[in-house]
Length: 435
Ligand code: GUN
Ligand code: ZN
Image (tube, rainbow, N blue to C red; front, side, top):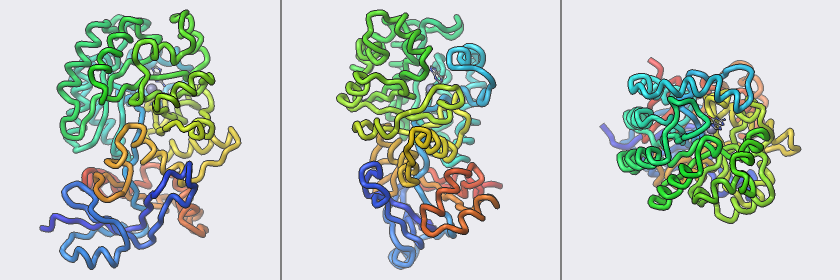
């Protein structure tokens, strides 16, 4: 058997950031091919040329499907899988009513393993090959997630969610135990195969200054790790933060003061930022994560994609499952489009696809490894059927170019559009993988 595989289909490759270069940043090849070997991409280009160059390679023909890098979800809570789409609450009430009772179950390793597997299979079925996930306060929840990701060969990031106040008794750690447990998990999992540990204070209302300080110290000891948290999601949340930290200049300052602001920081939501916060985040090269379905579902607000990208901030895109209302990065792109429209900006399909792939990979500091079809990158690939439902097919039929062909799938597509999901070159999910 050949150790080389050629995937045939349409391909879309980015040569630049479409927020800087517009749609010219993308190169479309109608009859394209991607050559895979040893879990990596070794060539891309025209199908005829690559078939001739690799005559012994196994061929998988995806027909008219569009081959893209697997989607990268820059902020999810896998433990919230079973409570996605819970009705009627805003952030703080939603946490207390639905989220905390569910998260309390993850001290049970068997339950954590069941939900981790369920979540990862749903993600792969939706074309998502990498994510940065919050776990719960329980170390078992982190072991379960990494074990399940490792079994699927995925590049995955996650960390123990730390909380030592304003949470139920069963969901509180302490400053010391958060430091000790996070450190032990980091040592067990960070850099093991395709896995990476993320230091994870949930958000400043659920951490004492002592806990933020301890996690800031841990980050200083492991600066190559990412740190993820929430920032300025809802206005009532911001008021609460200012009561809890009366000396803070603003919400970001509650992280900055304890060593939790840096270029490897990931700040989820970031909707209601002050000018000082924007300037500080841009200065230190931090990444923001846009969670548009969540921001609508929980009623948080409209992220300023144009203003923040123009200010030079790195921005990733995310489902925020289960505050977000979908596992699908296609849905998430559609929501990002609609939110931008409400702010008077029409994001180009090239920008939406880039955000869900290379943009999120850059936010996660995985640029060049995933989120791209560049030679040498890891072969996490999705084959997107651009006519997956009758409604999409009839609209795509009128398309005059690749963007018109792709946009109906961005706006109306879901897991039915995922023909195949490859992880490190092997088929893991999608309609082609169904038994
Ligand atoms: N802020 C603190 N925790 C959470 C969470 O689990 N989901 C969302 N959307 N916001 C949060
Ligand atoms: Zn979140």
